[in-house]
Length: 283
Image (cartoon, rainbow, N blue to C red; front, top):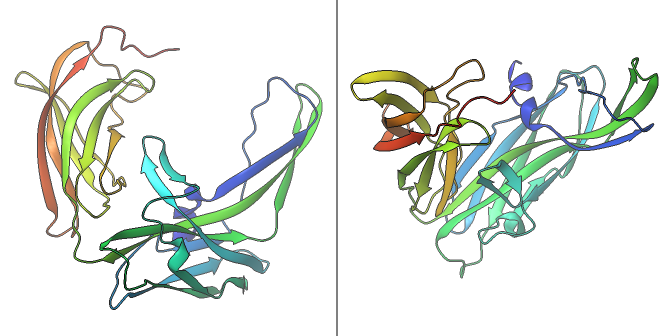
């Protein structure tokens, strides 16, 4: 049942705040991880225009959960996962759900069957959508700011997205690292990853930062999504908030890895990166 907690980082959206006026208040909602959805990524190949998948929804709470299912176009960019109003390879017009609304009893799991049906004229390509399971009941919490003697109430909706990729044809990604640079806002090193292939993918990154013959740092970046025929910056999470880096010229070498964990596809890179003189951490 730990997977319930693992998915909650994608959960909370549509937060609305009604309160007395206040100028300086830190608030962080305390939400129990009651609803879990898995898998987070679904992939299927269309055969004779049809593709199918199954989503599981679990309830770890003490009360029944009412939820609805719907889909939206999405992308991955430098801001991460984002839904869209429209998208060239939008899967949503071809999707059906069974059921569209459901009740999950405490301690139980329900299955949602997802299917797509393509018309014969649809060209070969990857089609994608984010499938949301959203609780129909709004949750709320009341908090008190003791410093300013204020009370406020927050209401929010909880929804979890599963991304669904359907492939019309034999499609593959094609990844490379175009450059490395310094992200002045985040004060970390980033790489520009390009996917010129016809399939989206979730590569991880093994990297080593060198200055001459000296190894400065080495680490691994967990999987990040990149959409077909796009470019996206991956932050390497280096240096961390507790670390610093000396300005100068460096070499960044490593590999992008994706696909089968036991026999992954790989794309090696070796790029230079300049750390500017104003790279220090802001307080």
